[in-house]
Amino acid sequence: MSSTQQTTSFLSKYPAYGKILADRKDWDNLPMFIFICLGGDAFRSAKNHNKDRDKCAMVLTPGQEPNSLKWPVSGCPVIIEWDGSAPKDLIIELVKCLLRALAISVTVWPTWEDFTTPIGFFDKAQQPIKFIHSREIIRTYYSKAMQS
Image 1 (cartoon, rainbow, N blue to C red):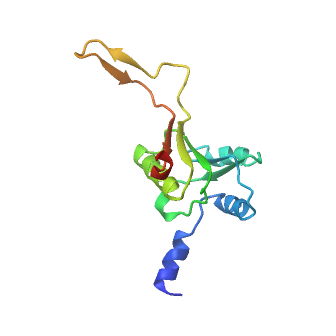
Image 2: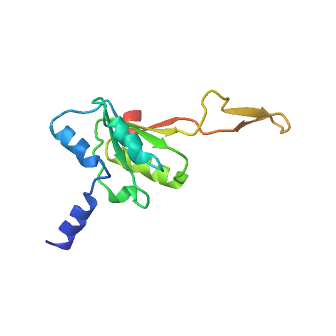
Image 3: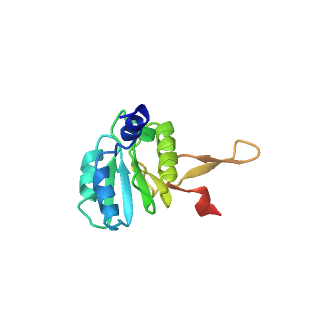
């Protein structure tokens, strides 16, 4: 095996539970949503999602680099369950990888936030008055092809 083939086979490793999704895609059995779970409760959360036929979940384990994995997400919306334990830089890189893998959209869901509280406040002490965000919000990203 040449070094190029070895590198390609190394990069074709799926995240945990990713092979299940790849097999579903081979049978043209796409889920409605794909969840990417990370953090302390990731495997339990993914296992619960995978019980529902309309969902599929994968796990990004600690220490894994998103760029080193094959993401079988093309043509599907993806939701990242972010528990706050992973750094923002890792989440940003994961979003980029998923969009490069042709996900329809990638939503980052900060699961630790209470969405019944206001997202921020106006600081009247500053001139001009400035809006200050006091918590994370759910954000959805689209590929450039989807935006045009």
